[in-house]
Length: 268
Image (cartoon, rainbow, N blue to C red):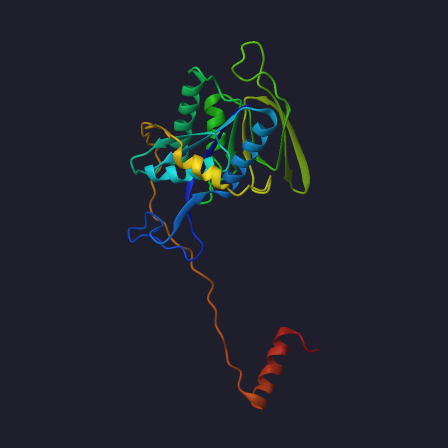
């Protein structure tokens, strides 16, 4: 199985979100970066699948040169190869991002290594949460697609997508929807987005970190494509307003407290 997992570099925000003065970006000067939790689970799922069936895992991201750090984190988790689609600092929306990923998949398919058997994504990015990229990639490549998956099984491994005589196999994917389980059977190659909770990602080992530090990252620079969308402004939603009222002190507060209980309907 040759599996491609697409991940995204996102801010590691654990406290108050601050917007830059121009209202165009989240101020990340005091925060680090990580990979979206859904996508970390996608990498773990790919590593488990290839551990059972053989093959290799390639992790791809589109972003600045600094995103190489997140790719090395995924290599430390067990991925074998990584690709950076390097950007020049401009923000790429879901349409342009999906087009660049689809081009990278086609480039691989036309090379000596042949096509991928499975494309895995996180269900949504932790920062934008737009849910669009996996579906757009599948549409661009003409591949079947299922989203929001919580259980994935390769039922028929097949001979590989590059085998001229046979298909890559079949997958069984399931998800929860309104209290019921939906089960999908689909041929490979396919695009599947998974949700956090499909597995428990492993911690990187010391040998894995050392191997990731030495690994060579394959880089391409996709052509920027405008998509007709323009960001106007980022705005942090107002927080809850809280107000405290002092009813009194000691015995003098009892009448006010009784009236308050009556207003709440506690006293009959």
